[in-house]
Length: 214
Image (cartoon, rainbow, N blue to C red; front, side):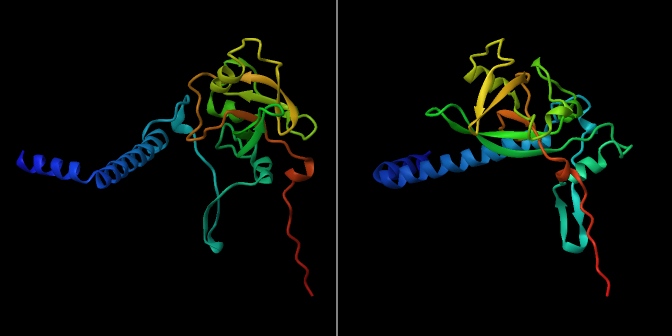
């Protein structure tokens, strides 16, 4: 107790040092809590999806190049989809961001571009509306969006008639086709909107490398 009283008196005598020490302690505690929250949600707790133990993430590996985990390309996805009997479903996604809102009231939000099987692979679906279909995966037909529950409540005031509502994304209009359940989250992603992963037929082809022999 004497040591504590002495330490307290020293802190009162040096307010500058005390403030720096308290702020440093607060920053360290905040950083550790944030790291633990991410580790807890991603590694310790089971994923919040049905049959979560059967979900896996697929990477490409190139041992000769020293690359152990590389993302799959769009042609990889189209080549493997329906051809790997060990998997009941395969989906692909791409993290991105977009400018959402009308002129004068825009903000950048996190989004995820997904293939049509994304939600069925996870075993979940929208609470309102529907998921994307294969027909929405072209550049001419991808002007649709699925909202998170948070975004729906914050920006559309939880309007039950939100399906069919249009939002402006990167200057273009997208039609809302679904709203996700309140507790839906995908790993540590903070995405508020989900879009179809659009591409052209040429983008989906596996490019064969040709060799010229003399």
